Image (cartoon, rainbow, N blue to C red; front, side):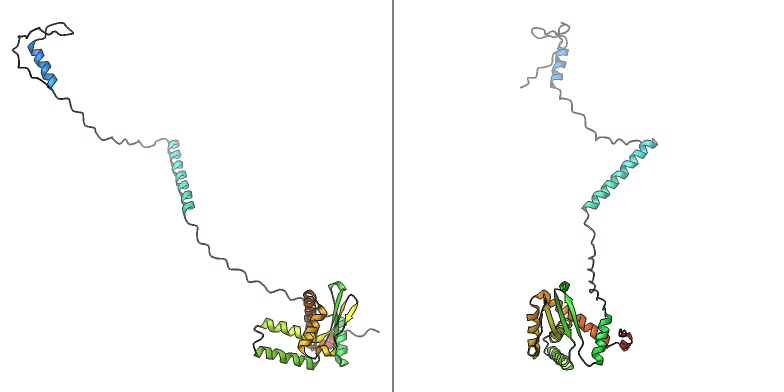
Length: 256
């Protein structure tokens, strides 16, 4: 609590006269009154803070410094572009169509001079053409005989009925059935390690029996398919020679 003292007339003193601690002189009433006034003054206010000033850099005058600054900006832009390429989604790639597989090459049909002579002799002598094929390096062999007109007609009728009944749903199935039936009827002999098996007439009374006979003669799938492949060559040779109008001109003359 502050107690205010009444003002004093200049030159008057109260009780013990206070003295200045520095000069040792007595303090007058005026000086004491000034001290009390200073004690009652308000504290000075803080100066207002001004906003910070923006300092603008002078333009770069040195060519070397300017080139370095421009290079840094270019490198920074390149870095930003590279970073953006990693974050961007990959471009859509159109699906590559699968190549259409080419059909297997058809082996060249080779007709030997012996085949031509035997076929010419069979046509002139009114007998069926026969040819033997070695299989598996000569360990096996199979012989086929040209089909008679009756056998060929019987097989064609069976294939036609299969088409009408839709038992053969595709051209490939029809071709496979044709080769199988014709090979079974045309089979003349099968030799395995010098043991020859010849089908009987009763084995070919029906087409189903002829097919069963072919399967018994070959025994395994590998031999069975090799025999069918040999017959395809046999049939192709016959068709080529029979369809050649100049065939007899290509038959070599008999040797003396």
